Amino acid sequence: MVTKRVTKLPVAARACYNDGTFLTYAKGQVVMQIKQFFIDGLGCESYLVSSEAEGVAAVVDPDRDVALYLEEAGVRGLTITHIIETHLHADHVSGNTDLAARTGAAVYVHEAVKAGFAHQALKHGDVLTLGEVRIEVLATPGHTPDSVSLLLTDTTKPEPPMLLSGDTLFVGDVGRPDLVGADAAREMAGHLHDSLFQKVLTLDDATLVYPGHGAGSLCGRSLSAERSTILGVERETNPALKFTDKDAFIADLTTNLPEQPGNHRAIKQINRAGPTPLGEIAPSPLRMQDAIAALQRGAALLDTRPKDQYAALHVPGGVYLPANDQLSNRIGLLLPPEARIVLIVEDEAAYRRVVLSLARVGYENVAGYIDGGIEAWESNGLPTVQGDVEDITAAQLHDMMSNGAGENLLVLDVREPWEYAQARVPAARLMPLGSLAAQIATLDPEQPVALICASGSRSLSAAALLGKQGFKKMYNVVGGTDAWRRAGYPTERG
Image 1 (cartoon, rainbow, N blue to C red):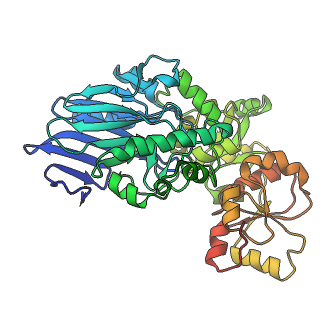
Image 2 (image 1 turned 120 degrees about the vertical axis):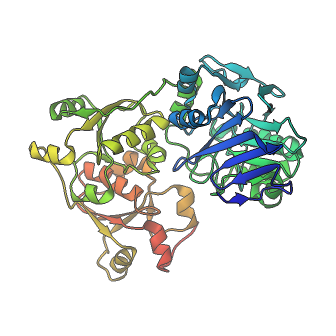
């Protein structure tokens, strides 16, 4: 590992590594260790904080895949005694009850959550003891009313503490204030200003900050790919912290917000009541007759294979969402969280990844996957489609729009309004993926449609929705608006 300098303190006293591990030392021995876990796509960051001499650990903001922490603790001989939530999450389901069931550890959440599961209630100023690690609770409302930040101190030496900032302060950004409701966004933004300027920014500039999210998360506007930061650096460079005036801060923070997680209300309900422990994900192949029976009873067919496989052959009327890092973020735009789901997957390993990705955002009603996949579906004489979506490049789209070949072509941009406003193909019509199903009736299925997003993924999901409604000719712009811009073609803004 390559050591990265994070403060002016001697590296013999503390060190931070590029894999997210942070250590403090005393007399050549590790006293405290912080291990960061990052979930691609969702951008979630969780932590295993340990007092090495005492062999005890706390997990902060646990992911649904609790094996991450159990395996790490097992290798290092640690006992997990505390599970702490920095707030009631709206973008992912917590693994807190599952981890508590497997370890016997207590779960700690702020009293304002009014959690419906066994827990210890936290309030501002509370102190938790984890061996030689002191954990002070700072109430930092703003992202949510119950948000807290955790101030970690190695009690063996007088050094600046570390801050697990939850969704209050990110690298290059701060938490969004609108996930408790758009009407309350300005009030919450005001609370966030107070939390930042009256609590967080009063700490030592050398304080190392570990946030609850990084790039990919919908809990902020422009989160950095950096996994940690220093408070003094954020004070100088974080755009949101330039607005010391409260009214200006509120105005800035309540504009140009990204789309909300598609099923954030359902996720919050699950987290408040207490998630059902996920347990081990076992293969669940469905015989064809069982899959058909589930579909006839109203289950949704979700095809998660790679794009080229889907384009080559797929089931008409199915929903398409590839099994990549964005599945958790995008499923809420296409299916309600209570939907019964039948899967088409690439292989058995992909099934586990998909089920975990769905469970992370509250989709737990998965019937299983079709045994034999699309080939079994076709061999049973069931309908399939190929060629209803044609991939085109940005250059091909430009040629169609320039030479008259696309005179009757509708260019449909399925990104979010804030993306559309930044740069778009001229004359492209905005219809975000999350609202497309409700607006399809306004479109003519006889008109050819070129679907475009940022990179070509959401647009193929949109094509699946249009195909379900009988659209005759659809083009998927490979590389999306990003490819259009890289090619130097003109764009519109605003």
